Length: 120
Image 1: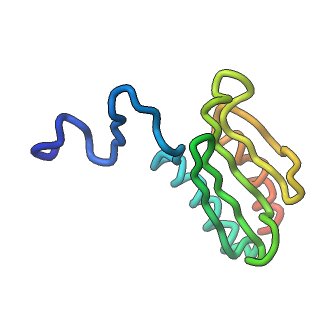
Image 2: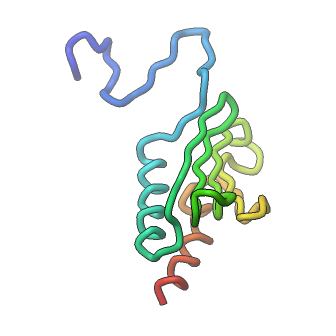
């Protein structure tokens, strides 16, 4: 613990009491899983670029085959859906929902399978 940190651990975001967060973001572990998949897809020649967007409702990671195209895959975190169908959604290139769920690893599974096919 750092002196003067008020008991918060390093890397932890602490909200001001009574104030909603301005934007949704990815936790370090979540971003690590997403970037690990992204790195392997780049190595397989499937993806070349990415973009992230953070709004008050959702955090989005989009992966592109080419920069000027629409994203080949989009991973969205929407905490408002946590108690319903799950806060994670994987969208395909044409905006179709490929997978929804409560667990990020499970939602990334279709892309993992695609990676295995790309390497074979």
